[in-house]
Image (cartoon, rainbow, N blue to C red; front, side, top):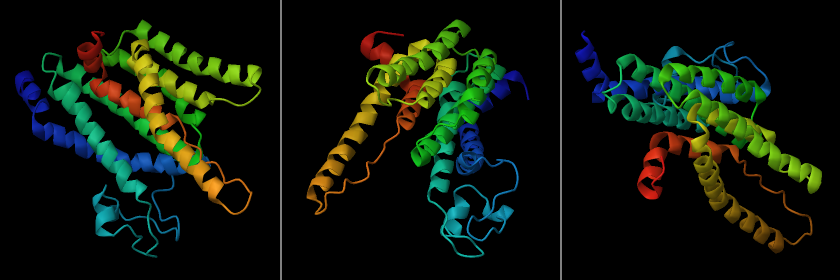
Length: 285
């Protein structure tokens, strides 16, 4: 296959569909990370197994999305239900992979084939980190250092081979992303004498800046804060209303809404459509 034929295939709908299938397969591994990393377990061994009865999952029952539908969301051996999060993560990974391929490979025929594929690999790995961290944060209100700290240098270095944002923009982005949250956290702790935003959010924003560069940070922080407020404020109001309506005076447990998933969502939005939106609406690049 010649260079021209390869370029034509990379831009074809079939290649985009193959990227989606690739993403779904990786989505299964993302689920393993989401389950095991908070517990400090290996993400490699043992293989996938039912958490209720311990029976290993057959290869035929480990097909992304489809196996969950065929088995009606239950273990073949003990019929214990599986979490609906598993097919959801696999579907999200498939859609992200297809969208990233379509955006950076299929619609960028002027770039060399190797650079296009490298860019897909970088941005899909970046998206996978965001997905895993988001679901862990939703479940535990934690962003594990075992993921965030290695992700910063690894993604920063990987971006050199993908012709992404310039290295100085990404270096500044990584530093500024962490310092932004560090300053806020220190202000809450030393001035207001209470806990504020966690430093895990700062490490996540540093990883985002290490890939997208410092120009993405205002967009990510603003959109993340705006969408977070849209979700958090109604929950806070509902919790307060329920507390006033209770017969006892015992306060209801406050529902914590982590900020990490909103930062991740904003970063993905910037990756796929952010620069175009800034250019068209605000005249910025």
